[in-house]
Image 1 (tube, protein in one colour):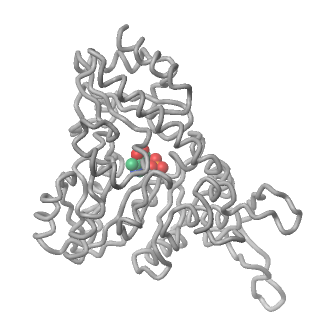
Image 2: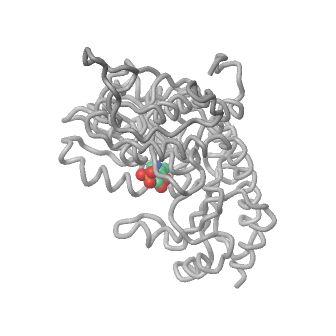
Image 3: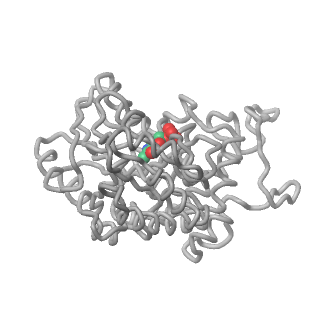
Amino acid sequence: MTKDRDDLHPQTLAVHAGAEPDQETGAVTPPIHPSTTFLRGEDGAPVGDYIYTRERNPTRDRLEAALVALQTGAGAVATFASGSAAASAMLRSVEPGKRIVVPDDMYHGIRHLILGQARHWSVTLDFVDLSNLANLEAALAQGDVAMVWVETPSNPRLKITDVAGAVTLAHAAGARLAVDATWTPPGVSDPFALGADLVMHSTTKYLAGHSDVLGGAVLARSEDDPAFAFVRNLQHLEGAVPSPFDAWLTLRGLRTLALRVREASSNAAQLASFLENHPAVVSVDYPGLSSHPGHEVAKRQMTSFGAMLSVRVQGGFEAANRIASATRLFRRATSLGGVESLIEHRAPVEGDGTQTPGDLLRVSVGIEHVDDLIQDFRRALES
Ligand SMILES: Cc1ncc(COP(=O)(O)O)c(C=O)c1O
C-alpha cells in the first residue's frame, strides 16, 4: 500500500491491500510462490527476505498484509490452515492453571476442540451466557480467568454480546478478551475499536468467500503482544499454515469482500423479515430484527447485521429436516460465508450433547437475488 490505510475506505482496501504489482514482471495480479525454500548466498546468508515457507512465504505475506490493512486497529496477523487451527493457537496462549470463559452458544467445532483439549492444556473452562454481562461478572469473580472468548452473533443462536462492556469487565479482572469474528468480517464489526485484545477469523467463510479454500487468521494490535508472539511462534514451529495456493485464493476472494457482504447482509435482513411473518415459523434469530433481544447492542457495535440467521419452524425436528431438503437454491450443506446460500438442520449436525433445538435451521444467506431466495424458502415452508 502506498497510501496510509486510514485514507481509504474498506472497499478500496480490499481491492488494493497486498496487491502491489510484482516487482520482477510488473504483473498486476500477485504471483504465487510455491517454493518451500529460498537461496542462500556464498556467506550462507539468505539472498532475499525468505528462508523457508513454514516460517514465511511471499504469497502468505501478501495475504497477511491485506488482512492487517482490512482489520481496523490490527498491527499483526498470523495466518493458519484453518480457523480451527487459528483458534487452537490462541487458546493455547493461556497459561496452564488459568480459566477461560467461553460462550454457552458457540461454533460446535471449537467447543469440541476446547472440551477435548482443556485437560491437556491444564486450563479450566466456564461456559457462560455472554448475552447477559452479569453472567460474565459472576464467572470473573471466581478469579484466575486469563481469557474471555466471545462469539457475537453466536453460532447458531445469534446471541449478541456487548463487546465493549465485556472488555471493561475482563480487563478489570486482568483477563484478555478474544473475539471469534468469523461471522462479522471487516466492514461488519470492528472488535479492536470495541477494545478486544485478539481477533480470530475462519477465513474459510466471508474473507475467502467462495467455499473453496480453508484458512484462519489471528490478529493482534501489535507483534509485541505476548499472546500474539506465542501464536506466531506456534505458527512457525508447527507449520499449520495455509499453502501459497490457498493464501493466493483467499487473497483473490477478499477483493470482493465489501460487495459480497453488503449484498448478503441486505438479503438476510429481507429474508429474516419475511420469515418472521410466515405462519410456519416459530421464531427467527437475527440481530437486525427489532424483536431480537440483542438488537440495540448489535445496532451499536455492528455496521450491518450480517448474513447469518437461524429459524425455528412449526412441526419440530421432522419439519425442519423436510424443509432443509425442500429448498432448491439454499443448498443443504455445512459452512457459511460463500456466495451461495446454504441451509443446515443444525442439531443432528452438532450431534450428541447439542443444546440447539431440533426445529432449528441455520441459514447462510448468499448473494443471489433476494426475491429468488424468498420464493425458494416460501416454497419449502409450504411444501
Ligand atoms: C464461528 C466459527 N468459528 C470458527 C470456525 C472454524 O473454521 P474452520 O472450518 O476454518 O476451521 C467456524 C466454522 O464454521 C465458525 O463458524
